[in-house]
Image (spheres, rainbow, N blue to C red):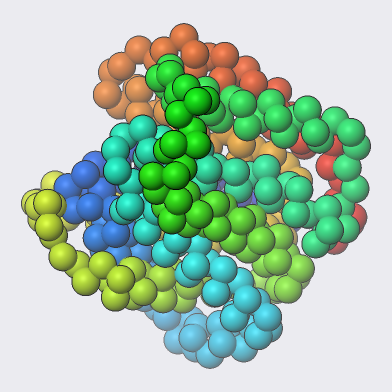
Length: 301
């Protein structure tokens, strides 16, 4: 296992966690689709520019990667991005946004589960309670103490089935991406994430048309989108390399903690006291992630 790649995967989790507050701010000002279009297009341009500055033949090297990785993983990356932002754009209210977030955060559990057939990993019975603990902890953390009555779930799904289908499709596609990147391009020293990010941004521009109905383009929004655009290619590139070369078992288990870290960072940034339910969710997330890490064993790369 590549230690630097593993540490890069953990860095990706930290970057995603610390950027949630920025993402919410930009989305509230521009709208989810517009925010994603601006951030990913700018991030893709920055990433490609950096690669070309370091290696003028970077595009040729990327296009020389295995076709399955370029088309399969690239397609999954772009689909994930479009599906997730499209789902957020369809959310009718704050409660639905929380529910869509819960659905999207199925991806850590699905990443671990998909590694069993796709990477021929082995798992013990502990994976089942570990996964349930992790998912329960995510629900507590993302709801942040708000009551989400189970009786209202069918009605919520029925009012906006397309949004929830998109969020579920996004979770499945990202879990597939994480496993197939290792299967199709694992040993190679480079990936094509900057290209994937740029293509995803262009697609979001085409979907959104950058219409600002109900939104406003302000200097703070531009600055925040720019900061996110700088971190997006770094985080995704680190994750891609971790999935291909690092300790995937450890990084996948730690990804359960992403919603917890993002909530703690937002609470510290806004100087808000976290609700009591958050600490229960914290305990469940940590227990679930440790159980998942212990239960799954990947074959030696």
